[in-house]
Length: 474
Image (cartoon, rainbow, N blue to C red):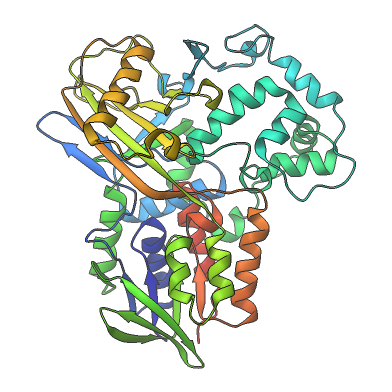
């Protein structure tokens, strides 16, 4: 039985890892780019003692997805840099709103005072949830903004939920599905009539972390137990997060998994005996494909034989994001923390700023990552400004928001085209229909990755594992 994986990002490499573990060889991973890792990219400036990350930089060790990633990290023997819950980067998260930097509450006490940009104590929003009835008819889905406004009020929707969605998927909370991205909260309202009420009932019942038992037959990973015991909020990897895909490629290569770079699949043809992939004008027959490509890249590969499936895949929209990495000499931040988010109601071109040098040691430098664009990319960058214009724009807003007078000594500008899928209202049904189509037509194709199962590192790795474990290869 021959299996191929399309895509050498984290989800594709993870699919290769779990396929090897479950079925052994033969196995080939095809990646169109000349490198593995997808959007995970680290630039380590050894001479200057800092790292630029143009993609994610930290991983959360939470729940089944977090434990699963830690099991993988443990197997690969990677060096971890934990950030505990007491660390300033875990405690301090900020908003830039109404012309000022606002600290978000980091303890229950913070619910009772009036903290900008909010005009009343946050406990009142919780009371609103307690007295607000759930919708009369059972909703299949709605936008996160609509859900938050209905349950907690417009101020929470504008200044808490909307910027959070910018941070998660660079998206507009008025379009993003609450059922997909915050399914737990949505189900609590639908089942118990309120979010807070549902949370209290679930805690009272002592609901366990579902799925952990079946996933870890040998007991939960040691690193996960350590993370729980030491109260990690998040962690990074020594040398930057790109160490993870690089090490995975090395691990797979040492076990005779063929990772082919600069090999783009141009077409898929399904037949009774499997599937033929067109790679570099050659037909490669395999029995099954695990595809981790973005939905919009898979769509043209199946369009000739399965136009309906192609159309469904194209119904998943993607956004472009601009990432600007900056290094300043010395420690210039007046307030330490993980970083800040900018609510869309502020109508600024930046989504947020991550304080990298607060999270990890950066050799005495101030290192920041500015994120821009996303859902609003065309509004701010539709005329395709130069890298210098983008850098100047990012520098201007960083200086204004953070009170930094210096210009960056070193910088990088990355425009990441169609990098984050948007989980618009109805996304769960959309994904279910796509997978139902594969099952109905008995296509030897499994789909994993951010488009289908969540945008985070933990999500895409667990997505690969679950798709592989669902396979019944002869």
